[in-house]
Image (cartoon, rainbow, N blue to C red; front, side):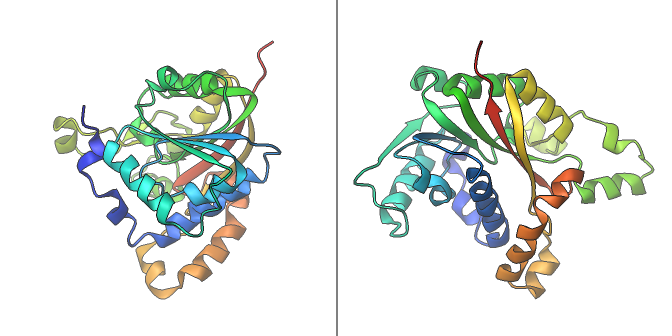
Length: 262
């Protein structure tokens, strides 16, 4: 069955988003530094392999999963042609075409040290079930790097305040950002989540929160025109941790650790 991204030119989406890409790349590497030992990594929603080189150096076995066959085909080509990716003579890359829900049927339980899921959760309505699946794939004391679209980022909060909705920061219910037209067309959900709700659900699924980062904090079309990407990223690096305390940015990254089952 064709996947939603089979007919979408996702690489082109990133053509003018170098700042956002590098901000996410840096966030992943920062969180990886908190993890002592990694042998096997699963990336859920790997797409065309955009973030592969941000974590590939940390494991000998990497499983890239995605429901889109065309995206995985692009990922294979990208990885093989990328001279900057570390030597693969002693490593093993596996490509798995699968939805998140079907992954437990494709990958053995408790076999991964780390699961990475970036720009995926906004397409998922049952987040609690998603976290249970991730926990099932992880070994005890395994780690989970999760990214999600932040409902309460600063621009959204100020916009709601302007409308007179001063209780907006306390509203933990998710928001589907699709228009009425796209909802009727039965497109994929595009859901923004409240950080407090996501962290609570992670705890309910057996995870401890290790670290949180606020990402793409200065995402602005205007600023990207007048400030170099290198300068924006230097500023971004300094802001990701401090601004996480107020959930400032449009994207939140969380590093969570799976509790051992006792």
